[in-house]
Image (cartoon, rainbow, N blue to C red):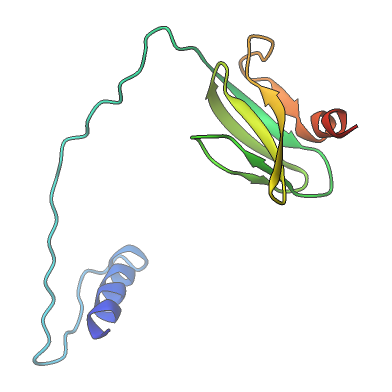
Length: 126
């Protein structure tokens, strides 16, 4: 437990205050280790098409979404969330244990477009 506090104190002193010194009580030791690894390229099909756009929650309520294999955002009221998704990717609305497909990314979504999620949700639920 003491080591955790010492490392935290070192981190705070270096990054928050620009200092790199830390007093260590007698008999205590700090051991650090790191390794540098080469990142592996992500295999992608050159024919895959992606589109960047914004999901806007224009409502006054949170909207829980599921974007399978990507993320599960909870869009806050009156907020924007930028995404870059592959063509064919589904975006689902989640309520409790049930889900409904809200949108499937296709060529009708233009680069940089703002998608009004609340409007889509009302269409899907009604």
